[in-house]
Length: 117
Image 1 (tube, rainbow, N blue to C red):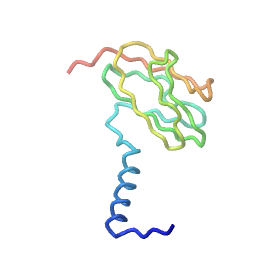
Image 2 (cartoon, rainbow, N blue to C red):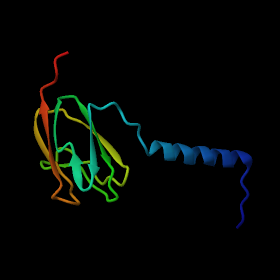
Image 3 (cartoon, rainbow, N blue to C red):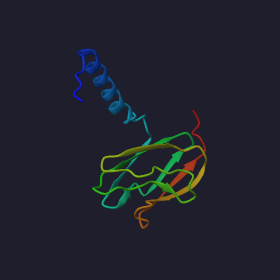
Image 4 (tube, one colour):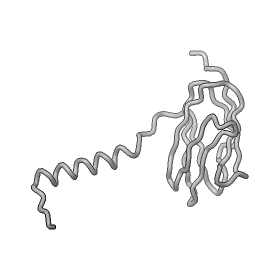
């Protein structure tokens, strides 16, 4: 069955598709540090931040990677090429993480108590 769309239906469809495409990519919020994933390594393999700090992870590799805490307290799930993920650290301590797809990729973030203001 052929169906002709009215101008209004086409306009509504375009708005819906555009809104859906834009909604899939949340904006990046300000972060205290950015960890780049390149050449199957986390660049900033040892990082120190404070409770409440946000860290951005960016996959600059041609392969998918994850940012997964060894204790499973955080997990980015799969980040494709140019994929980004942010995490706010809420507990002080030493947080070891790795890539679930490439377990030899490892790094550490030390989270200190919140900075005095």
